[in-house]
Image (cartoon, rainbow, N blue to C red):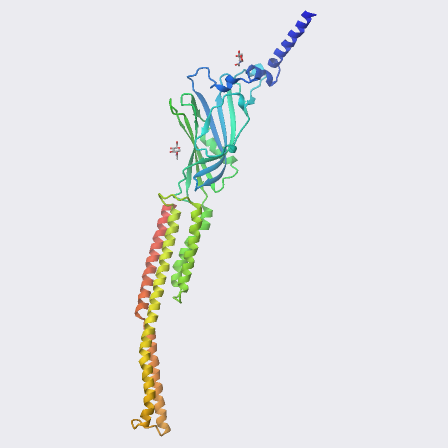
Length: 431
Ligand SMILES: *[C@@H]1O[C@H](CO)[C@@H](O)[C@H](O)[C@H]1NC(C)=O
Ligand SMILES: *[C@@H]1O[C@H](CO)[C@@H](O)[C@H](O)[C@H]1NC(C)=O
């Protein structure tokens, strides 16, 4: 009985022991790799047989989308896909021993994982999605993938906004290890990464990916190794041109054209003030778009402020001209008043004196109709002369009006030249 039982037991053990190695299941492989039970040695230590040998970690990064570029907070939000590859020297097998198994997925928690992270990362932890498994190949190479909604800080240079091109660094480095224990490299080359990214890019908003560049820095005993992915992207400026630059230009043109409006009692002035107000609305919009970088004003802000100043000056000039013309009107009115008052008095005096004269002997009342007609003729003649004299006075350009017209002409020429020069300068600097 007992030898039989022993035999059966041995057979069972034999079957149990030989089945995984000879069968085509993963169990045998995992048993061979000592991964069936929690193995703290595998998770705790860097998997090298000789500690002086550094572990090479290969990183690849693809961009699936440029979601948002925040000029105010100087951050760039991208949808990235990151692949990390490294070698575990304790996890290797010969595929022919295991029915040709050439890849196996193991839980992420069961092995050591390099602590490589992104320095510019400013996203919250919920934005990272690690794949729960790592794929393992016979040579011991482990491969882990991560999808991330990466918000990275990036120093945006808005000098040429909206015709700007931004370069943002995404720096991978180990937080705890130095350059002697972990070295960084990349698996795919930069052209391939750029091409794949461009192919799979779902959304890039107002941006266009130009290229991805990779730079390596060897670490030292103290400094960790660094791998820098530089994303170069340029803005699609059309919307800003349509909603901002063209309207401003149009306002300047309107303001130039308003010099040809007749000086008809403030109509010109109110038109110019309306243009100025419209520009200030655009300035408010600009404030929402750009951060306040006090050091150097972006070109678009210079453009805006320049246009505002130019139109503001022309409003002041219109005020001055209208004031001078009003002053002229006032002066001639006062003169007319001053001239008219004695005349009226004179007339009154005449009117008063005439009856006296009529009573007296100086001019005897005309007795015949002929005399009366000549008298009326004389009166009409003097009245006509008077009217002609006043007309001439009216048509003669007055002093202040002449001054106003001169100022207007000179200012218009200067304004035209300055605006032209300013716009030319901007175009040269900008594009
Ligand atoms: C698994 O563990 C045993 C003992 O703990 C050890 O002898 C063996 O070499 C290990 N296998 C591998 C592949 O490391
Ligand atoms: C980005 O990385 C490149 C290459 O390493 C470096 O020359 C450049 O100074 C970095 N830019 C910033 C803003 O850190």
